[in-house]
Length: 88
Image (cartoon, rainbow, N blue to C red; front, side, top):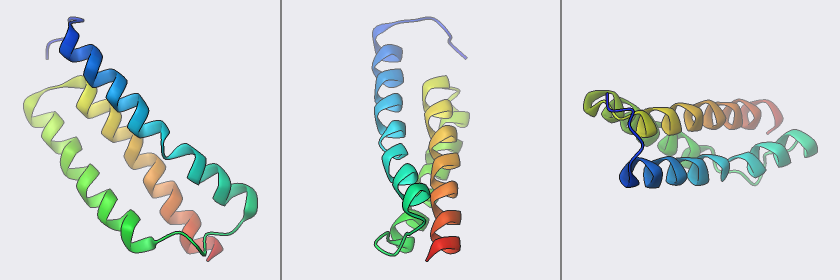
């Protein structure tokens, strides 16, 4: 695994931070309102499947930015799915 900081790693890290943090407002809104009726369960299940594949792809190519971003995204997605099931 190449841990050196180069331009492509910086782009990957920034992209991972942006896409992962995009999930946070939805999770916060569901938690605060205790309502997930307007959230699509199917969309988050498909997103979880895709992000899981990206995570394993990151493991296969040994790229830390891909692994970390998708791992954190999966945690957030599963939290949203659990809140959807609980509050819907």
